[in-house]
Length: 131
Ligand SMILES: [Zn+2]
Ligand SMILES: [Zn+2]
Image (tube, rainbow, N blue to C red):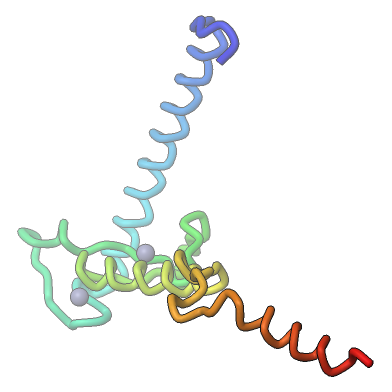
């Protein structure tokens, strides 16, 4: 931060962020309602059934992971209970993480490493080559 002042720019930004969030919530409510209208209230994984009293634990999963892809026929939606939805996304995260090196994979040399082994060999070879 150069000066730390909060001017009209940050107010404008805050407003934009708030509007974007409202937009997103409105859109999510819309596709959720639509999905609940066209699909039976059953989790697509564990087949748990939901009622008006428990339906808030039923979530709309986007099959392609794109929350902006909301075809009206529901072909990108899947109703999952919160638990199965969590599972689904943690599996995707694991999948995404596979390309990156795991932390700690660049390991230190083992404790049995002999620092002078190479030197010994070097000296032996050198000795052979001496006339
Ligand atoms: Zn489930
Ligand atoms: Zn999802």
